Length: 95
Image (cartoon, rainbow, N blue to C red; front, side, top):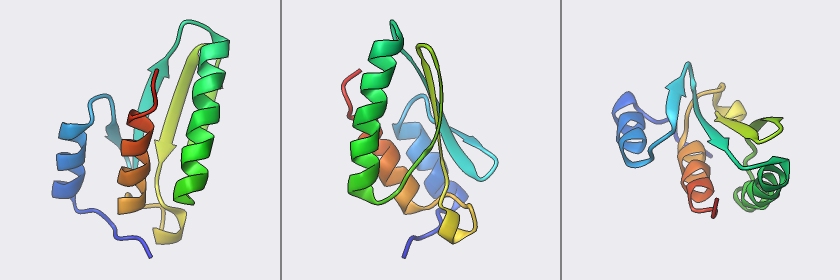
C-alpha cells in the first residue's frame, strides 16, 4: 500500500531533488542527452529501476529528450511515497 504525500512532503521532496516539479497530481522531470542513443540507454536503466520498485512512470521520448511523469494509479492518481522513491532512484542513474 502506498501513502499519499502531503503538500509539505511533496515540497520537501522537490527541494531535495532539483529538476522535479509538481504538475497537477504528478511529479515530472525532463532530461536532455547528447543524442538518441544516450536517451535510450537512460530509459533502459529507468526501466530496470521501475521494475525493481514495481512502479512505472509515464515516459515521453523524442530524440534526445526524455520526460518522466509519476503518480500512483492505485491511489487515485495522487503523488505517493512510491513516486518519490522511484524519482530518487532515477536521480541516481548516471547521465
